[in-house]
Length: 149
Ligand SMILES: C[S@@+](CC[C@H](N)C(=O)[O-])C[C@H]1O[C@@H](n2cnc3c(N)ncnc32)[C@H](O)[C@@H]1O
Image 1 (cartoon, protein in one colour):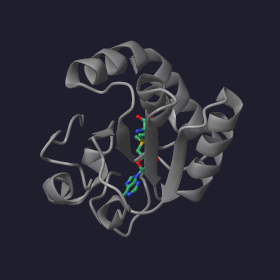
Image 2: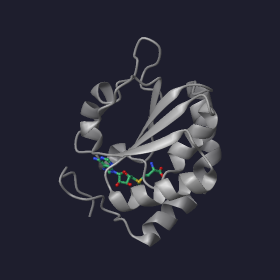
Image 3: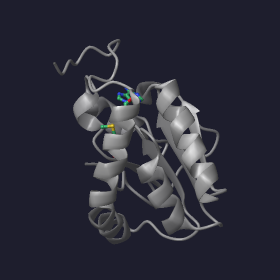
Image 4: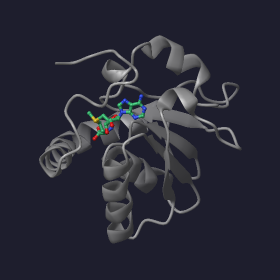
């Protein structure tokens, strides 16, 4: 059952099987996601926020787009998913991605972001519209909430 209770865990769980499902799904969606991000203006040197990172696929895709002069910060509340995401980032040799364990409603960051992205996250949030305008500390003078689907 899908629930909108903010205290409830992600309904699909955090098992090895769910992580593998996310990875398979991400492989299928990578070309569409990449095109979408490029068309939204995500490019070299940017600082990007990824909400609901799961096991890291969107953050890693964005990290390749922003390159070594850019940075991606992923927000994920589940520690098992974060362990997997961090291991995958290390295995991929990416040095411009890091993750913060947090609920997306509690995001704090010392510097603003150029863009914020998220994939398959809004449907899990009890009040998605409340997250969009306030959470990303995106520099709204240069970029709006860039991408979310
Ligand atoms: C369907 S997965 C999508 C993962 C990734 N964005 C992707 O496309 O592969 C949703 C993820 O959002 C996380 N999540 C759900 N609600 C959250 C919240 N309120 N704060 C932080 N993470 C959340 C879940 O733990 C899960 O890992």
